[in-house]
Image 1 (cartoon, rainbow, N blue to C red):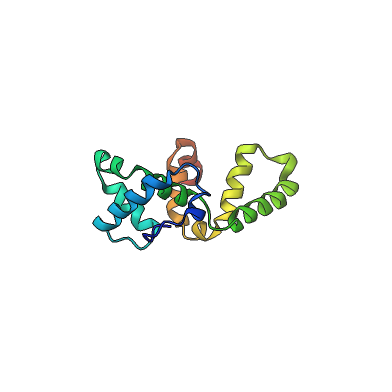
Image 2 (image 1 turned 90 degrees about the vertical axis):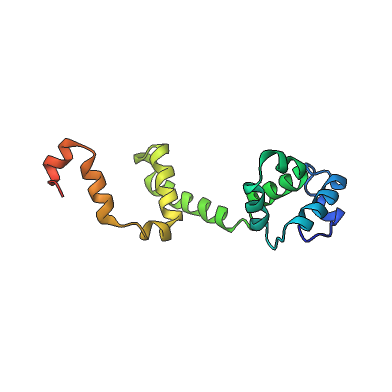
Length: 138
């Protein structure tokens, strides 16, 4: 989509973007900036001033849409699958807020494994005088 050639058939999927203005703005945008990915375009737009960004309003709209649209639904399907397993197991013993937190931890186990447990423990104990007395100051 951001290659420089505007395909009207692909652009019809994004009704928010005006095709005529987009083609013009994209040509100007690509003339000034070398972009290879949507992330490159997003970074360039993020670093622009507000006035400059308004010149490329249609390009910005499309970049925003492409950044929020997932490439696949695999992560969403995994989340629903995990939620179904956890909810049936913990249905009667857990509030909605806690269930959401458990699902996030379950779906992002790789990030959770990278957390330093000792830092987490020290932070937990340091938040309350009762905890410091019970667990000791570390």
